[in-house]
Image (cartoon, rainbow, N blue to C red; front, side, top):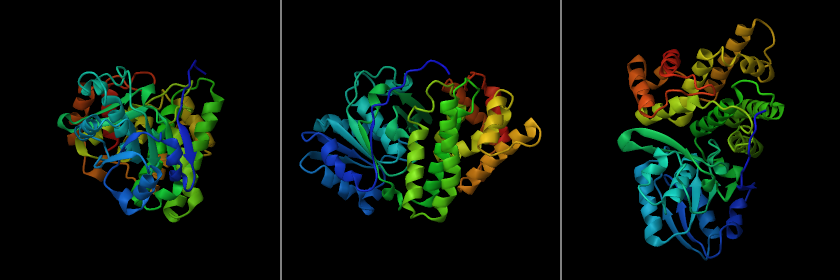
Length: 385
């Protein structure tokens, strides 16, 4: 296992009715901005519960944060924070709302052009407003990590950043608040969480049995619970297990002390920025092909994955690896997420544009070994058609 530091200050408030804990979690004298997306929280009652929990405080609201939060929209929120002298943010929604709130927190008092936060990947953040979250869509793990991804529409650029200054102070996770989600979003969330685990687990061995077993347990739970939630959407225990899996998949713990990949995510970001695909859709397209193309470099962990997650122990090494990758693709399809570029009316004609964007964003040596060149990315995309 590699040397590592692990730091995560986010307090988790998990279970039914925990939105009421806002009354204690948010400072009594806070001037709060509530940020959310398209307004479903007003239809399903979450907004009213949030406002009740914030009673007695100065509260403003900002709506319209997109599924892939845009720099242009978030800068409007930044201006509102500055204009109204707001000092605490509350993200109510899924990973996109939380990601967007992290940017607003960092940009509100940033000295200079806030776009530089993204250009420098967050390394230049020196302060950030405190914020909490009320999670309504389990998928990204943003509720318990220090990462964010923001899209600048005018540049067709989807850029990640991170900083220890943008960990949420707390996150409220009530599985019952996910009942009204469309099943498409539920399936997306399971695929998203699965891919997050894979990017940290499926690299090369470094004698890290704790992280490996933890990661494999999360994968097995998602495989078991994912189909259940589609068959019985109102089952609280299933919702709770998926919500907790998604949080643990990317709160930093399983990635501590092990190499990490993230090539699939970087290629996927370009698919979203250029063609508007859901984040999970891009991961479902790219990940199986990424594993196939890089089979030799990942051979040891692929064999471990085949045996421990899919119980594949018979046949040659290549047969076991290929079957594990096939089962991975089949699982994504089972969750309702298509896994081919052609499923989204994309194909060979789009590959050059994707590679051009990867190059312009300096994504030319990706992966745990920094060996995912543009040529490798091309092979991955060609295999994904």
